[in-house]
Length: 400
Image (cartoon, rainbow, N blue to C red; front, side):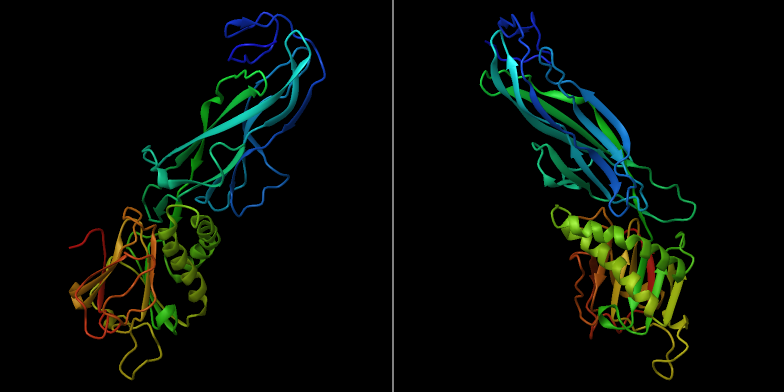
């Protein structure tokens, strides 16, 4: 009869187990079912033709009965075609073995049990370890045979001449333990593969933009758009194309964010991109500036039909706003030349609770509320609200 507390990877005569030695292995009926699953990396919106594509595989034999072949425990990585880098979602699977195996010098059958545990870690593009709230298991558990992991997006600004942000990494390692229910033999934890398998976390590249809308709730017949001077966006048409491509990615992120610690921040990025993608095609009058500041919005006359007989610009005519911010943020001022009271929309990912975007549905109040909360910083409370006082703006990296 098998004794001891350590099960070797191969069961054969003469192999010591704890204080005992296997004296004989009798070949008998072996009933082992193997369900091979996969670690899968694919763009969440892409269709992978012909099923998963093998990317890397490592196998290790866990149990080998005398005279019978037992399938390996495998960890696979497959990589799908990625059309929208940045939406990194990983499904991790390991083999499952069930059934019975004859052990010892008598035909005593003992059921094989497999335990699993997973180690998940990551780094940002600068090789810094990702905080725990940047990686979330949204299905399964660290001790299940399968789990789904999602990584908080790493944002990068679309800038002319700037070196694109490199990839981060997501590293996965499975450990399995084989136990025999009756005899209590235990293989201990076996790492499969011996070293973690790491996959690239591609940054999600987004355009930095500030937008003022004529009406509340991002409506009306005119919108004013500003991007920093270093932006790669040349006009509203290119901006619309980019945010249209981003929309499906961020909406998928919104679905999984409800299960993660960064749910509060993702809504602002999703909301800003969704509003731009939805509203821009329908607005008849669109103003666009690629510049770091403008001293007098009253001199930017882009509306051919006056709202008032004397007014064909956007000065003092904003009712709602949004911003996508990565490295810098737009600040709007009460007076010309960036003077007077100031309203900044700062949703940079470096700020707690923020993830690159924020929306303000109503500027006609003294204390505008943003989604997510906390993206608005203001000095003063103009009478009648902010919608009637914005006269200039500047892209900034810190409060003055």
